[in-house]
Length: 181
Image (cartoon, rainbow, N blue to C red; front, side):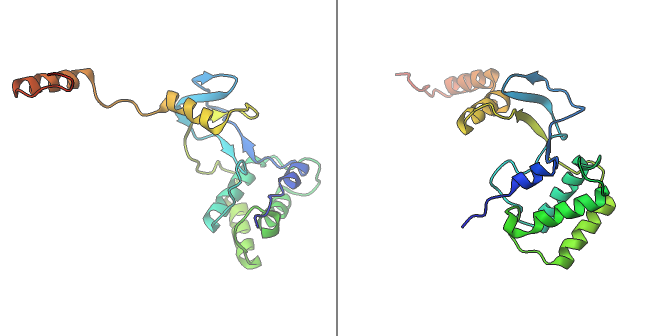
């Protein structure tokens, strides 16, 4: 049985777990998406799919992103950022809450948390994104893939000059082109 993620708990605590680029400006912006011709590394969107955190490495990356996005503190609490984040990280590592696919013992969990709290605060390494779809556009996966294909899809690697040269070569060799009798 699949465990539903308790994302509403993060929402109630006002934990920031997604952010669009701040410094990078889109080349094209529509009501449905933002397109960055040179890509952007500034987009962080966690827990947007049904996929769960499967490894320690991924867990640590998620913690680094959460720490970075919430560096200004969690609203409504009077305790320190580190205490807030420790509490949030413990919630996320509890398999019953639906964020991770594995059980983690307290010692390993605390080791990862302490490491993140020691090195956190800098933007974590992120993958480059060229297209960022806006929330609530109502686009299906097929429609999104179609847009991606139009914007950054594979371009033909065959140039008109190459086709012409092949036709000349075939003619010289006495070979017939398709459709010729």
